[in-house]
Image (tube, rainbow over all chains, first blue to last red):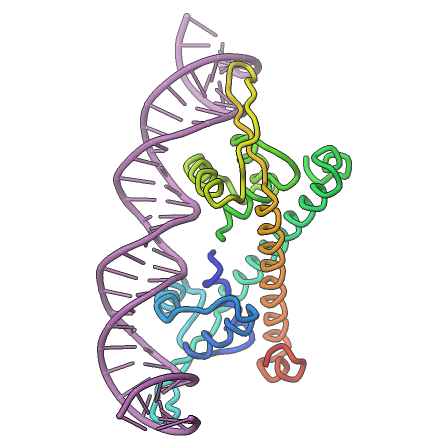
Length: 116
Length: 116
DNA sequence: GCCCAATATGCCGATGGTCGATATATAAAG
DNA sequence: CTTTATATATCGACCATCGGCATATTGGGC
């Protein structure tokens, strides 16, 4: 799963949200580093809906503009939790190996059980 | 940066490694969940070398087979550290929002300062 | 003796998620 | 009156990855 997709699911994790709300949420969640494009978002909604990870929730009309809400399905919630754990492990593995690098190479990695 | 690229840099973080070694390392690091394809790896080596994140290190001949080693540059090391921190934050954000979901919705998110 | 798996590098066409641009519409700010 | 923000939606282009193929050696199983 790619970063934008992960962040879309993350934006929906706390509760239903509409397209534009997801875009602003993602910007916020990522500390301004990820700006979701409309093309990415609506394509992702279609794809994720057909995969059963998100579902259309309801529609509102605010100031003459339609708001189409999406929510995370149970499957989407489970999948996001799995992906989050995956990211956490990968981040941990990278940090551990970078520490080994600073400490002086692969010798210490084997010594401390960093691999194998 | 995509997952395979991140894991290639991670594999090189502890010290220089050759192509096939990276493939097995990545499989190990990811707990068997990511199996790097040769096509992905050697294309990535070319790309990452031109970006200055990895560099050709040395060549060995073991059992009549060539081993071409690559190493992480300083820039590659810095970049990997940045990316690892990015993953860690994203994983944390997703987990936090999933906890909010279990606790009962967006109300708690605002209350606890999860966003805004 | 023969085939398969593992080791090892490398190319190439296809796939697919993301990007960037564009379109449409309302409301508020300058 | 134009720009910015809100809001949804489509479409072509890009490019990292995938999957298959090619090539070569060593070692184990049948």
